[in-house]
Image 1: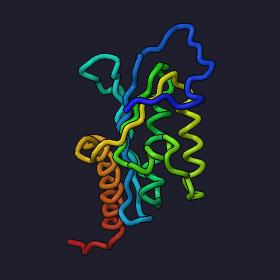
Image 2: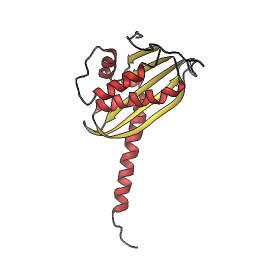
Image 3: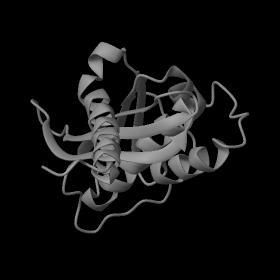
Image 4: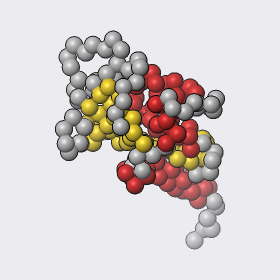
Length: 172
């Protein structure tokens, strides 16, 4: 669903024009435990033409966080990665209905831990002349979800390797 949101794109002028007309971000965040070790994933696509092409990805851990904090951090990181491309239109796709509804103004952001991330996301979104926010089902967000799990699995494996390296091994 495409909607106009008050304040988005106000007063924007780009002398050289955008490198990409439209960027689509699929983002996801997750924690193993809630809160627990958390990771984020985002896929940026040049959606100016079909088929859309990948122009960037984010896959990293963010420490101990809740699922909702991870969802917001994934969006913020994706939007920060998109900034230099100078697109006119941004399309955000997330499987967190809470995130999308809060950005649309349909739900209030009650959690104090989410408020700074919400404000940062709104600030980044205001740089675009057009903003299209949409909730997608998990099966339509598999690439971003895979990036979350990739980051969390890599961190887990690294911790396990460090722990194994610190265990004394018997001499041959």
